[in-house]
Amino acid sequence: MRKKNNTALKSHLEKNYGISAISINPTKRGILNENYIVRDANGLKYVFKVYKLRKPELVDFEISVLRKIKKHDFPAPHPIISNQGKYQHTFGDKPAVLFVYIEGNHPKHMDASLMYRAGELLATFHNITSNLSLKYAKDSWEPVDMEKYITATYPRMAGSKIRRVGRAVPYITNEMNGISFTKTLPKGITHQDVRRDNILIDGSGKIHLIDFDNMYKGVLLYDVATPIIWECFNNGRIDKKLLRAYLSGYQSKRMFTSNERKHFFDAIRFRLLREAYTWPMRFDSYEAVENLERFLKNYHAWKSLKGFTV
Image (cartoon, rainbow, N blue to C red; front, side):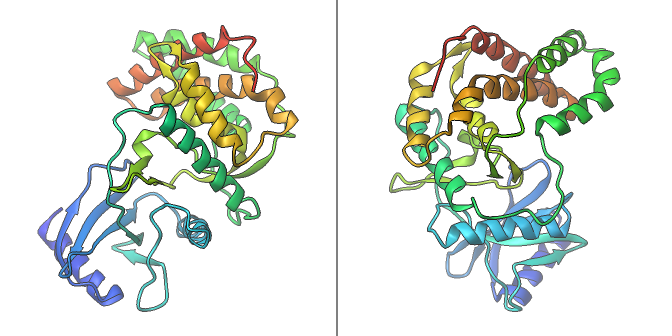
């Protein structure tokens, strides 16, 4: 961070929060935001987040959800109110929020015990936020919006100079067209990114959920699918032990409806295809192509489990 920005942020924290920062360090986390670790004279730490692409009303929605789950002691980074009684301020010309800092580490791998606890955590989040409504329209990754994205990007994607992308796109879209989507699945506030990168384990062993940037109101089952597609496959093979542990943890807090059970298999198919398509759609990088191939390989493994039930 440039010195003048460092000075400006120190002044912002002093003026709005009464915090005398002795160190401010940018983190590597975040593609759409800027995050800074702040330490004050008393040794307390905070996270200062600048939302580079987020509208203020959507930042307010994130704040409202985090305040709601704080009332239920949900383990997450909660926003801090300023001296002016506000949670959101403007830093430069961007929305910005100060959060509590959670001391902890990301798990290097997810074993059955952690998957069970991740399931408990996500189900608890769904239960707590079940009566919240989204006041502002927000882009989503639901099937109806994915159809729009594919229509808009298909020519570019199918004609990609990267052969692996160009070959995969027609297959992905054909497979997605073969899925029967229903409008009757339960909806609610969805986190959209529960995986090891967004889980912290503190010194006592307690797990915390972070990074609520992608939240929106959508189908809960597609949200349930996220940890499965990221953590329950290994080089194109499904780890049924991890999968069962995760599903058991989730259903210990929230049972699936009969309709969710009926559409579970296709929900995982959709999420794997969605992930495979959107990585090269959004990012022009080696990692994006690798993730495309990773999720397609996992898709083939999942599709072979025709008899899997929950």
